Structures are given as C-alpha cells and as structure tokens.
Length: 213
Image (cartoon, rainbow, N blue to C red; front, side, top):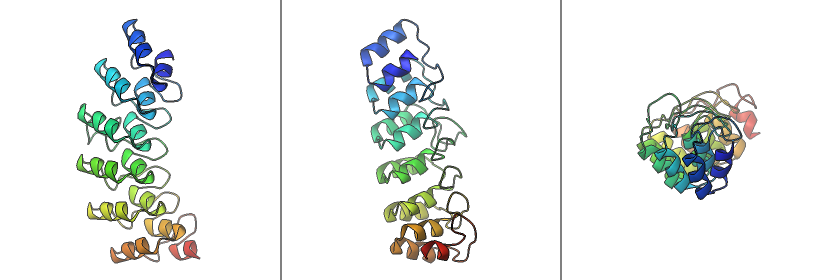
C-alpha cells in the first residue's frame, strides 16, 4: 500500500500526509507486512516514531523479516531496536515485536543479531530478557548461528548467559557441528570446554567430525 511504500523509502512528509488523510497505520500485506516493519527495515527511525505515535501495532507479525524488531536487528540498527523496546515491547511475549518473537528467516531478533555479528544488539536483547535458548530459524538457535558465523565474542556471551551447548535443531543440528564447518578452532575448544557432545549425531553432515573432514 501507499503508506508502506512511503515508509520504506523514507518519505516522512508523505507518511504524515497519508496518516492525516486516514491511511490505516496497521494495514497488512506487501513485502514488509506493514508500514512499521518497512520503516524499521530501511532504517527510518523518525518514521518508526511517527507510526508508533499513530498507533502502529508493535507486535504485528508477518512480512520479510517476521516483525519490526527482527528487521531492525537484521539491519544492525541499534537505535531502532532500542526505540521499539522502549515503546513498550513485551520482552516475554510469545509473538510480535518482543525479543523472543518467533518467525522470519532467523527465528527471532537475538538470532538475527548474532548472524549479523552485532555484539551491541545481542547484549541489548539479552539485557531485555531475550531467551538465549529459543528455537527456530535456519540455524535452530542463536548459539548455532553465532558458531557458524565464527564470532567467538558472541559465542562466549551466549554461553555466559546460559546457552545450551548441546541444543539441537537447525541446519547443522548443534553448535559444534556448525563451527566444525566454519573452521574456527578457538570456538571448537570453547564449546568442548563447555561440555559439547563430540559424538552428537544429526544435521547436514551427520556429526562434527564429518563436518570438519
């Protein structure tokens, strides 16, 4: 719709005009699902603010990124992530713009931030109560996502926050197999020190040993 198009392209004056003329701030459909996600995905903080003030549903699901919070995390936009959380996003709700919202390619905002190697947003989401062991997305969980990306700092952070080193699911079944594919010896050692099961079966390569080979 016109509102989503204007929001996606950063046309603040047109967004305001359309809303003044009665455009539905929560209209669904299109690439981004709704105008709020469109603005968040394209880093238009001022428009995110306008839409929220006009009653945009911060918990709306759908679209390319699942929800506005996940879109902001994928785009590495810490100010919009903070804004969405400050505007009353429920960090423990089971859907919508909250740190544990499921949906989208990456499952949730925490996994998206880990895949984008954004330590600041990972920390922010964890501080706001993100579930470190939430399941979903291409890589099954955030620890596996951080492992395949080879980010030792985020892997360490997740483990400190209680990530299950042997959590199963996703493309590589577990974090050890993921990092065996990636080839980061330091993370392999870290996971083994934390009790990773070297003989765990499953995933694309069957086991960590086969993945490394």
